[in-house]
Image 1 (cartoon, rainbow, N blue to C red):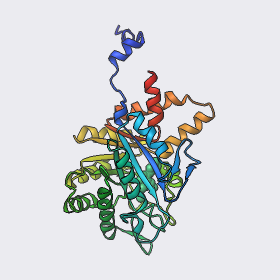
Image 2: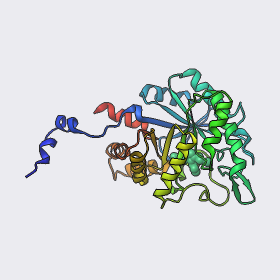
Image 3: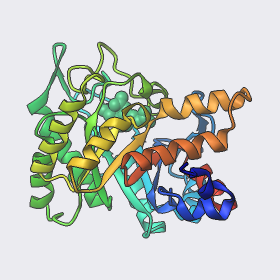
Image 4: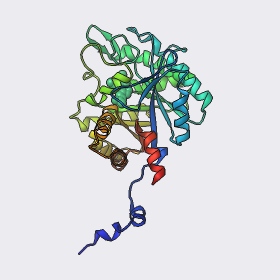
Length: 321
Ligand code: PBG
Ligand code: ZN
């Protein structure tokens, strides 16, 4: 008889043979920074997550820096939205100002800047709208302006999440021309049109005003197409690629891990967080154990980097172990 249980006899033995670990350096914490002052607004659907303004964000930055995680992902919420998303590439826009201040105060924290127009457009779509169409090619120059202005503000990594075709090559070229040859691109390569983003759209005030995102984000049914998206982004010059959401797409993470050799990020998205928090608040699950199991599963599937709203809690739980 094979006695698998020999290696499960105690904590030390199990620690010795554990195949997968979650390290704080694998984690990135997303933050929401809104235009205005004295804002500390809870996001109802994401308990524990707040919108801050630049003058109040120190509270969360301090926690991020103290936690020892690798960095943060920033989402700006502008006061002004229009058809051309002008606040997205304003050198003095909310996101640019926030990035500048974060890098001034915390130069060692990696700041990943999400590049997408949906928080900045009056219609809430990720690209330029003509009639009811989201027009791919007229969106690219705006994304490029946004990416360059965020690099100028000090962003360490540029992360396009818009799902327009050809944007990685376009952004690479724009960054290079502006002198940012050393700024990496983390592409949201396999981003699915998911119901799991709903709480984020409350947090970032970015729900589309008409229609949905299914003409640019991927069909959740398509695993092979995800690999083609990733392959294309790598050819276009992505330095890191992402699969999003994470938990319902672990097969995609695994397939990408087996096929590609560059770093893979997984975004443990708002809806995944909200479900855990809701069940935990009801006492139906053990939040700590569920979160650590989920993060471990994402790592086991093959992700190097996990972007997660659980990051700060997870670090506290790791410290106890
Ligand atoms: C912007 C963007 C979204 C998320 C990250 N960047 C929302 C969307 O595409 O609707 C979702 C993140 C989350 O749900 O936590 N395009
Ligand atoms: Zn978007």
